[in-house]
Image 1 (cartoon, helix red, strand yellow):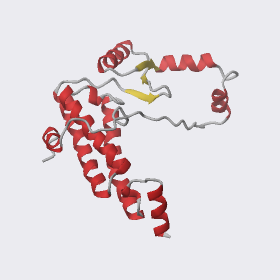
Image 2 (cartoon, rainbow, N blue to C red):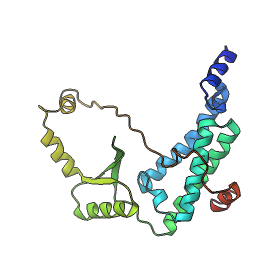
Image 3 (cartoon, rainbow, N blue to C red):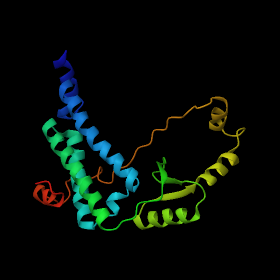
Length: 211
């Protein structure tokens, strides 16, 4: 049975780290550590914003490491995946440190969501005009495609749609506490690259203090 499953995975060109059940669960455990840190950085700096706050040279090396991580994820062995997961975590921490040392400003307390068109909707609490202006200025400076909203504006949108006109509003009204599931893909700017970026392993080691 195990041999048959392995052969099916090989035919589907699944990465080597998924060929056995043991390796699959170990690999997912390594990936989860990267995902956990990535979410932490998104909450601290904003979705897709951290890499834009660091110097261009370090950003290039960060993207190169992310390419290596994605390559291991899509076609690597378990040992290769483990190594790149460890390096990716160090790259995130190095970028975080560089952003802090550069004096980069964290955004006002807000919620961020990726829309289906790839842009961001950033919701700040209340109607604080100063926080709204700061959030918008920071987003423009960081090069992200984003719109900034206050809770008051969100309330206006809900009222404007109206319960009678919008099925989602009707569901919210009649099914208390109901939530909808929305599948949104977060694009990675280095996923489309076929060849590694110009950064050697030694250069990445020095950039992210991996040695």
